[in-house]
Length: 55
Image (cartoon, rainbow, N blue to C red; front, side, top):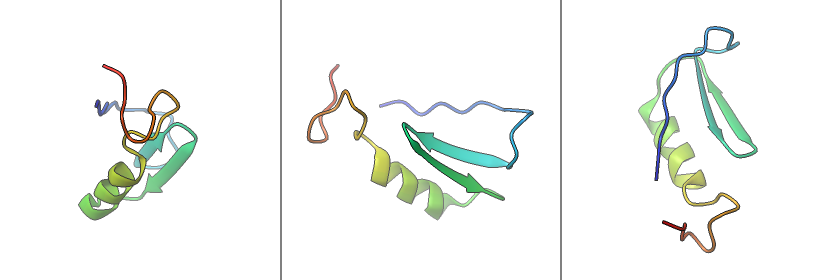
């Protein structure tokens, strides 16, 4: 699994979490919100089947 962090100057929020068609905006870093988002969306992309991803 990969997590990519990258600065975006044109973003309308300080932090944006994205996973396929999901977006969560945060005004500031919140470790609980990040963990919940990660746990909810990890291994749920179209290439994964029942939580198992190729590779």
